Image 1 (cartoon, each protein chain N blue to C red):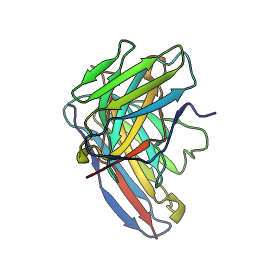
Image 2 (image 1 turned 180 degrees about the vertical axis):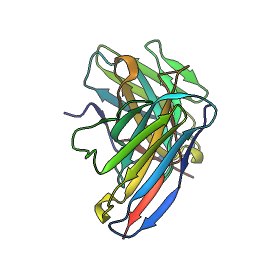
Image 3 (image 1 turned 120 degrees about the horizontal axis):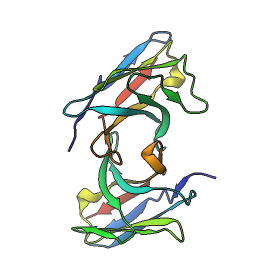
Image 4 (image 1 turned 30 degrees about the vertical axis):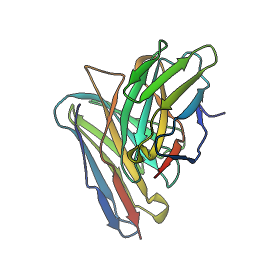
Length: 110
Length: 116
């Protein structure tokens, strides 16, 4: 079983739509959680950290559900520039290992 | 945010040659750096964890004699792909952890290696 699992998509949505991604992780002792964004043939860039209390950054909202071992990312009012692959990342205690999901591809259409 | 410089960004080489990739943290000290490989349409796969002044820790299935890692200083780690073959063609990315925010990785821009 993979440490981190994501739906690969692609999610094809029109501009202005709201879209949500989920990611599940297998290690209940995982310590920290992140969403990264990766554009085609580029390096991943940190989008946001994910906390149990949930956190919001503009149009992006991330949630962590430790009991069910999943994290989510909600994007409101999608823009064309949101088109990318979104990677779910989970770390172990002491940040010795970072586990990446395979990514969810989002295509925002005009 | 912190800046990680990775060089070169693109390499095309003949089979059997060795390729060296550098990863530098420009404005912070990186006690730990990671090396990843990414094949098309797949996620990042951790190859090894590099700690300054000590031997790298390789993931299962990664040949340490083929992928030589040297983390000689707090700002520089290098990955050398020895005797490269076409199946080594991939996107190699490094990342670094700062000693100030150890839960955030900062990535280099990646190196696209094509072995002919």
